[in-house]
Length: 147
Image 1 (cartoon, one colour):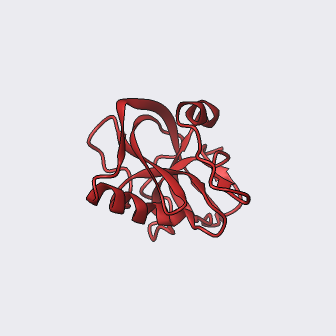
Image 2 (tube, rainbow, N blue to C red):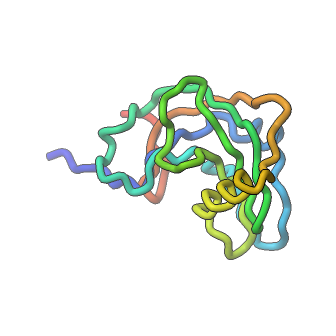
C-alpha cells in the first residue's frame, strides 16, 4: 500500500546555493543569526491541502532575483520566474536569506510587503538568474526526485 508522503511545504530549491550566497551576500545581524543557505528555496505552498498534486517533482526552471528587503532583522530576496506561471501562494515570491535570533522566516512576507509599499525595496541593477528544481520538504529533508 502506498503511503501518502508528509508534505510540510512545496517549493523550488536552488541548485547552487553557494553561488547565490556569493552573488547576494547575507547580512549579519548578530550572534544567533539563522542563515538558510542549506535550504534556500522559494516556497510554492506551505502545508498544501492538495499534497503533491500541484507540483512537478524534479522540474528545473530559471528564476531571477530582482531585489531585496533588509529590515526588521530579516533579509529576503524578491524573485520572479522566467515566464508568467504563478510560482507561489505568497503575494511576493521570495527567498529568506537570514533572520536574526528570534525572528521567523515566514515574516519575510511581511517585510517584503512593507518594503515595497514604502518604496524601500533595494532593486538590483540587473536581475540575477539562478536555477531551481521543484520538490517538497517533509519537515526533515528535501525531496527533488521521484526515486
